[in-house]
Image (cartoon, rainbow, N blue to C red; front, side, top):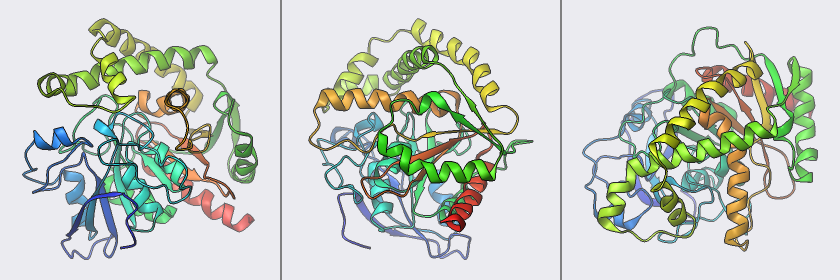
Length: 391
């Protein structure tokens, strides 16, 4: 393995030597994913002190080991998986290999950094509200969030179970597809991906350099597949973000509130405020969020249509500088969540693809219908091959 950039929390060397589809590949898993004999720290030392070592591996770990991959470590993460930046006041901030003066993204921070640094072939994380997509975009690697419920969350510390999903990182699309072949169930019936839907309001406010970086892949996309434009409207995003925030917070307090009350752990800026807010969200606010989601799902289904996938920036900007203020970082977090909530709120798969750039990374995303995970990755493989031909 190469020099550690603060990505790894535990170094391991576990494998079954199985002659499977991932034979010879190495991987790491996030610190909220159980590995037998090790405490899952959840990114917080007080959590580590108050919890026992795992008795068994999370099923996702066993699936990968049984496919021939070798587990070589666990990775640092944001506190309690409740942030998008990768800055942990207890364990430090892993270095972003693609832009060392910028945040690496979180909360699946170390997993993305380990892949970007070439330490492993792929890495597993979790994604509730962008926790795989943000670090993938910021570190310049491929990132995937599976459909909600597609991959078992057993043996994984929950944050907001209605949104928690497995995700993973890789440096090339074929490696990403190989992991999907092991972890993902068969796609839902008629889960075809064949029409690009450019979500125009998702492109509003993006950094100017994104447009130039995205021009070639979007041109290739338009030449490769039928396409159309669609919009959700600013009122949708504003209302959805409020409800999503409340529902995530309510479930985060349901997951961690008793432990917080009993142990009075110290949290860093941002996470402390989010849990303080979460403690005050009511059951009625959660019900309102669920009602909005059920109604808004019809609008998302209309945008996607029978064969569509949404095309949009993964994040509206490059990774924030480490020197940016807490106020600026918090504002950027909500700008990101505005885009991330589409997949998170409605349980959809999303793949983030890094774009060619001479500066800090930017990324383009595709969001598919629930249960179209394999078709979405297969489409990304075809597009990446097409792009290489046109370069």
